[in-house]
Amino acid sequence: MSTPILATKLYIPPPRPKVVLRPRLNERLNEGLQRRLTLISAPAGFGKTTLVSEWVATLPPISPLPLGEGR
Image 1: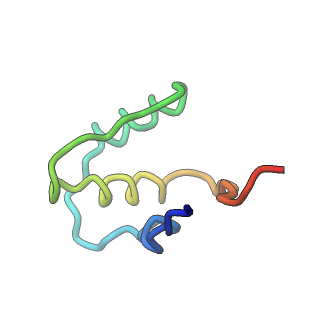
Image 2: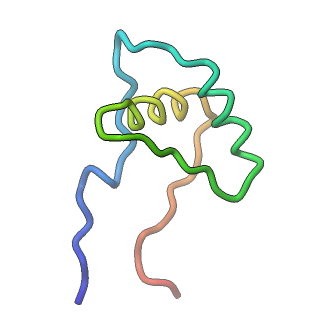
């Protein structure tokens, strides 16, 4: 049985205007580029998605990861 994917999980939200900049957390995310996995964990409403969208906007463009069946 296939599980549908929420449309909101298929795109990176644009950075929001008037956010509190968090350079220390952005630097930690940059350090995570050298690792296999970076886990961002916090309760709902603590700005995880906002942080990641702000951080991704500072990165060079990347190729999307295909979500279909393997060949």
